[in-house]
Length: 217
Image 1 (tube, rainbow, N blue to C red):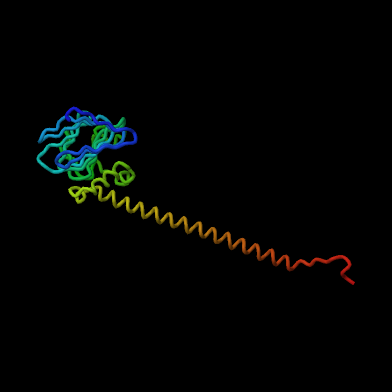
Image 2 (cartoon, rainbow, N blue to C red):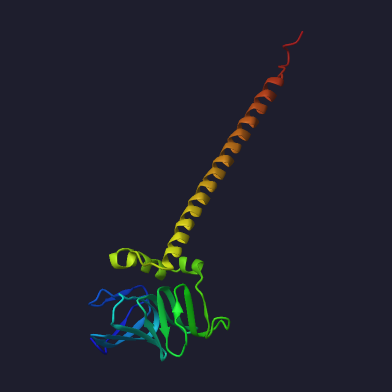
């Protein structure tokens, strides 16, 4: 209900499901508070951690507020961040309106109100797909979105994340096969070396004549 806080532990995640099919998913060590569950106005305050909002497009307003900055969905999939080093948003599908920022943050872009990286602070920049492909929370949300008919055809940037994951699997399999082939070649070379040494030793044995005293006249 309104006013409730939801907090995840260090090895847990949580999903808040709304009546229209929208969902707010929390990563480990994250806390949010429900401010409003009004028919046309969902408001969430993010206190800590990582949250992913997958919002069904409708006339309902959906906003996640982080440190006083509101991130309003425009029919969107986006993640909001509040850590000791950064606060902001990454937009995976559609757009997000940020309070105090003139233009909406588009799909594939990110905005950090605060960041230890000065190149990101108060700027709209591109999301790094490789970084997202290595992020367990992002991969989990991709898996969750693919399970829902409403979302699986509207993955936005997550399509590129999925492509990168598929490529990583192919690269890993190719590397596995390369290592196996390398081990097999080393084993073959070792066997050939052993066989060669055995042949040489046999040849030496044949070339060596042992003379027993008293056998010669």
